[in-house]
Amino acid sequence: MTVYSISEKQVCRMMIGLLIFMHMTGLPVTIMEPDGALYAGIAKHMVQHHDYLNLVADGHDWLDKPHFPFWMAALSYLLFGFTSFAYKLPAFLLLMLGVIYTYKFAKDLLVYSEKVALWAVCIFLSAEHLVISSTDVRAEPYLTGLIIASVYHLYKRQLLPGALFAACAVMTKGPFALVPIGFAFIGQYTFTRQWKELFHWRWLVVALLIGIFITPELYALYQQFDAHPEKVVFGQTGVSGIRFFFWDSQFGRFMNNGPIKGHGDPSFFLHTLLWAFLPWSIFLYVAVVNFIRKGKSAPEYYCISAALSTFLLFSLSKFQLPHYLNIIFPFFAILTAKYIVDDVKEKVFRITQYILMGIMGVAIIAIWALYRPEIHFWAVGLIVIGTAVFIWFPLKGMPRVFFRTCIAAFLLNIFLNGLFYPDVLRYQSGSTAAFYANSELKGGAVGFYGLNSYAMEYYLDAPLLRYDTIPAGPSLVFTTAEHRDSLIAKGYAVKEIKSFAQFPVTRLDLQFVNFYTRESSLEKRFLILVNSF
Image 1 (cartoon, helix red, strand yellow):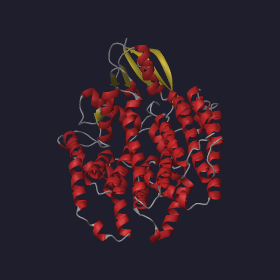
Image 2 (image 1 turned 180 degrees about the vertical axis):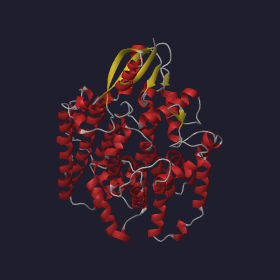
Image 3 (image 1 turned 30 degrees about the vertical axis):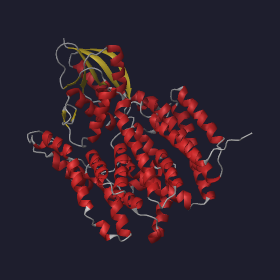
Image 4 (image 1 turned 90 degrees about the horizontal axis):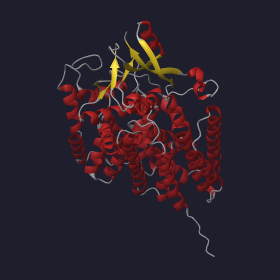
């Protein structure tokens, strides 16, 4: 009798498929406020008004991010309609592009084995904040795929696709997207003293091509802002969209002297990586230190240069958010995989990872017990099957620990995407109210009074109005308890249609997560019918 023995490479490919599926479970989850729902609504406005040049939010011109993600989301809407899936699909596809190029780049560098390339993909896909970004979609999934794709093609000296991917990255976040791309090569050629490569004429060609490819963005900005100096943006007139794109949105945030300000902490990303790159963060730190200690004997400098230059730049910035570092996760994943495969001792790896897996398991059980989400049997079934695979995993030694870590990440995120987030999003009142209005009120216009909800604006299948004062005649209004009471005090006839629990779902706290104290953390939003006497 022939006994079929599964190879490590086959297991790795199956694990990659499983982790991709894990990311896909975030696609149908309701879009979260504020940023995700805001961006989804801007792209929706494009399609509804057949206007692909102007970015509009809250009924006003919007100048913050470039156009590329909105163009991609708008194209998806034209194909699939206004759904959560349609908004998130382009970002997911660009992230999968990042998966392909993470593998290709690690493999084609030639200094790493195929095993390192495959394990890098597993590490990349299971990094916690990357999975979160597939559910709460902003610009980073786009950037992550575009940046590693550009680096790969420029490494292969394929200037046209390299410049095109770089230009799309710039049209996603601005010129700072070129930092990891540029420093990947600056670092490599500097540390290896390849001065001719550093100052080669092809970089001028790349710069010229990027300049040509970003002209749609510059044209759109000019048409919306520079050609209309009378528009009021950031509380002033004469605002240049092109200047904002090249300077204020990037250097202005970095130096904190632009129209959008923040409060930076130099250590912010150092401790953020501890959870954002779980379950691999410990070995990422060790891999970086080990790489630096090797100095001139390091196998290549592309990954470390792209990652650390961006990390340091963001750490010095005054405007910091956890998801900013996602764009360098492909480089972190390659560095970490190389260290785990070639340098780490099995006993150290086993002890460290089982501790982390234990923490993840305790987190699932604790959140489940504390929060008590509504049960979805498909998610519970996957968790049970995943746990069984975790226990009876076929391989031995380092691969067994490595792939068990991937399964632990799978279990955690199936729990989050299949049970936790869908339940939490019942408390995002804007989307919940929109779903109710769509099914029960059948297309009646709704007006905001005293509040705003990007989620309601996106999901509502009816006209959305904004009231400073309530017009004569019956009006369906979405408002707060305070503003409802103010209407009653002013003599309006108010009939409550339905109330909705409200919590800012991207800023969870223990009071909300705890089933016993949740009610005290909630506010109320109301759909009311208002009539003047």
